[in-house]
Image 1 (cartoon, rainbow, N blue to C red):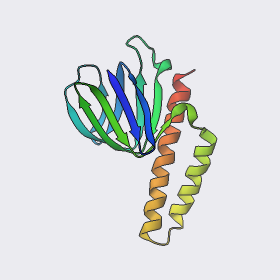
Image 2 (cartoon, rainbow, N blue to C red):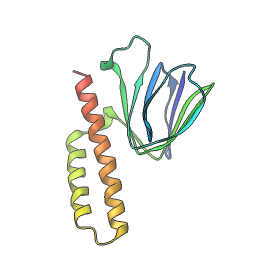
Image 3 (tube, rainbow, N blue to C red):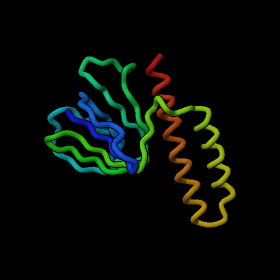
Amino acid sequence: MKFQLITLLGTKVDKDVYEVVLPTAAGEIGVFPGHEPLVSIAVPGAIAVRHAKGDPDSQLEYFAISGGVIEVNPQGLRVLVDEADNGEDIIEAESKAALDRALKMRDSAKDQVELEKANQLIDRHAVRLKVADLRRRHHR
């Protein structure tokens, strides 16, 4: 099935895959070729991509997303998000340090705007750490 992952900066992924697991408000869903048409909200979390039917979990490709929209149609799967980071590109130590800074920012927020910005950064870096951890555990 055709899988497209599109960010504000352009197309991140556009290729044929076997399975994609996505985070939605109702929980994770798996999309395979021939899936029923669907439109759903993606929540911040990890996307896991299995490129071929027989691929083991150690070959899954991961993306950290900030949430967005999922569309499944007869042509394939399209996910529209503000940003998506490939698990290969995430440096765990940098994300941990950024999460710590965001937590401090939240604790010292002076108004609702600062608090909301801090919470967005916390969500972003927590998801990035989750993806880095998934990638590390499955690629051993």
